[in-house]
Length: 383
Ligand SMILES: *Cc1c(COP(=O)(O)O)cnc(C)c1O
Image (cartoon, rainbow, N blue to C red; front, side):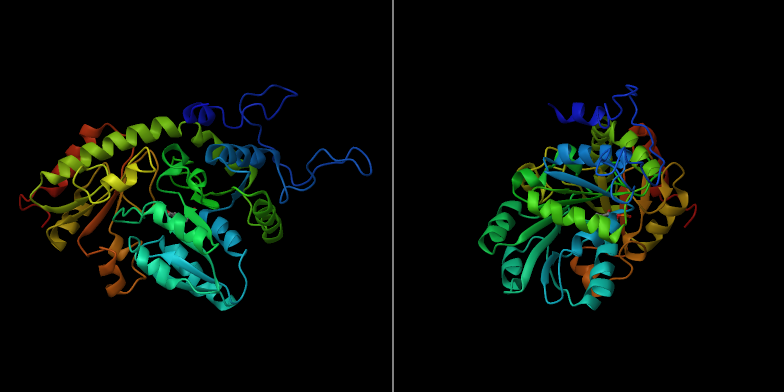
């Protein structure tokens, strides 16, 4: 079956009794048992809930996993997956990961004796050099944030096999519509479903998909033991959003390409980062595994004055964190998403003070371009 079909049918037939087309919201904490020793398959909603299960089954099918798991946020999903590791274990993590991922590793899991070496996204030799006998896993994001660098999957998969490590992929930026890491040999996929998957800037949710049966059992155990699970209402919203993922991503990608091409023509713009551009250094590499280029366009402008002018003058595009929703949003990574990093690390990641990150929505692209054009224009106003 094609992925757009799987998406549209997410959660279908979860209620054979009534035939409800939309997954019912099972807003219940607990479930009655028919008799001693008998179960409906559900007993308590932290452990399992039918609405959440519909979402978990959908992400498992989409990612080609043995099992899926839904959490209260992307970071709840990551916290649970990181709880697979123990004091003394070591992880190799690609630089340029989500800021909350750094915080979780450096401020929380470090206190439990889990150590991390950060390596440049593209530097395969650095990953290799970082591996020690204590290393358990490599954690990468499918595309780095905010400059959209694409890791060398083939090389990292070879490294993972050679050293018997787990490969964990945060696939938030590409989603299973474009990229399915488990099919390539990764072990665990994570998502902030708050972004593209739920897709409407209205829900916080996290998803995990696990390929191996035994590993899935361990993650399922941790999901229940830690208890950071997704509520039924938000599970329903996530399913509801997910159904249109294919349509939304097609539109968002088309808009992104047009906007990236437009930005390149502007004298106020120094550099545009979008893997869909033919000259982008990631253009070839991303096509080796992903059927899409994403819907985030980052660009460097000529001065701090331009940053201020663009942010204050944009009308349609909101100045807000997050990405992946139907509404376009813009951020200044150096003072928002990447503010906690040192100036040195920011420089390594290409996060200059004049970099802007645009999360492209589904609006008509001519309106988006007109909004950007009037905001970039140096006519003396607002300077
Ligand atoms: C937003 C985000 C997260 C965190 O997800 P939340 O749902 O906000 O907890 C993790 N990874 C990436 C790549 C993200 O963009």
